[in-house]
Image (cartoon, rainbow, N blue to C red; front, side, top):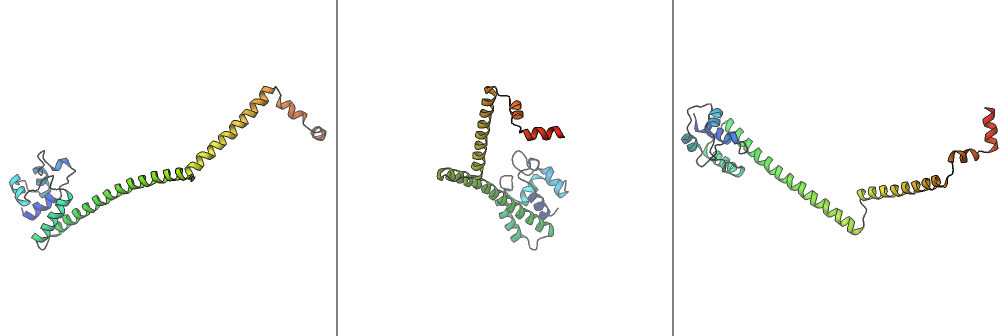
Length: 178
């Protein structure tokens, strides 16, 4: 097994995947054997390939340093080494993007909260406040209508009779002709 293939396998380990690491934080030998296809590997040979490599040091900044060491150490790089390096760089960019996206969401929440407070303080009506105020005015209209209906009902006036009495004589004669 070449040292380069072993390094490739080590750099493919994911810090988030518990199956890639022992409880002590070392690369899990079974995982490395699977990735390399070499069942004769020992923990010592793994330690010689990348000295000091463990779960803690396998974070993104460590990998970036290791990428630079690999780039400087072995020229020219094999395609698989180039792929691993490109994958690690992509992983680093994704992590930075995710971190920035979280910052963006948090900052947007801060700005929204502050804008709400400023609009309340200055008396500026937001669309949300406009909707709430409209609904309150509609509620008042409905309450007034209910009060009028209750007043009519309490007065004892029969609206059906009242409506019939309000018909004009012309309406009555037209109704009979039909």
